[in-house]
Amino acid sequence: MEMSDENIQVLSKYLQETLNPDPNVRRPAEKFLEGVEVNQNYPLLILNLVHKPEVDMTIRIAGAVAFKNYIKRNWFVEEDGVDRIHESDRVAIKNLIVTLMLSSPESIQKQLSDAISIIGKTDFPLKWPELISQMVEKFSTGIL
Image (tube, rainbow, N blue to C red; front, side, top):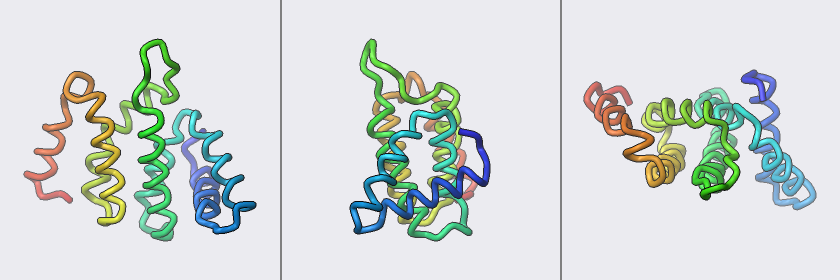
């Protein structure tokens, strides 16, 4: 998926539909999101949407929950299993997520914090040695 405002709007529309109580609206939206989550840049588009203050907060929270669930389903890869997350997306997520978490509203912080925890259980310290230094840097500069 290309990083574009158009794709962010499409994701926003489907995230909104996942909140619909009517299963005839909700289920197709959930299926669509499951279908596109294997595309490169999908998690980055979701993080971008979650971080946009002009997007309705309900949709941002739905995006944060969708991102956390995506990480929960896909981050750990069984030995000889298929990696559903592109390597460049993994690197970008680890580079962005601490800053995004610390600069997000509390309702979004919780979801991103959970995602960091899931990633950390698999990747820290060997595959994510910079996690602690990223956190210390952000806390020490007061940039939240």
